[in-house]
Image (cartoon, rainbow, N blue to C red; front, side):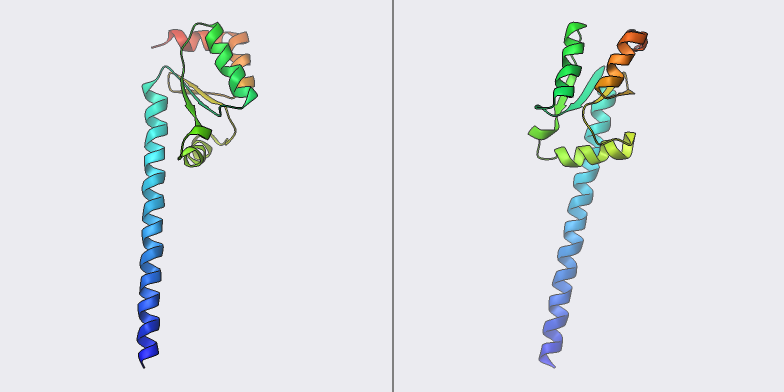
Length: 129
């Protein structure tokens, strides 16, 4: 009978560990989600980037040439970068970088940014407050 109680105690401990890990992941996910939303809506230009990505570098260069200072989140330099990328996947349906937002509007990636510059959409968004 003693083995039965040992098994019960082990199962209870395992359950508590699983619940604890799930809660920790949920809190981390919620904080990543809050960070993403705060970043998008608190900055005129927000870029979710990776420091080594050539497409991200191109997007940052385009804004530099337009004399604009984006708020850049380098996902590869953050402990929660993967969580942020998952939030972006849920939010915009893409997990790739860069993901660019101007005045809260999702522009897309580097090619989308270049197209928005060429068709005048970016300039309209930048002048809107």
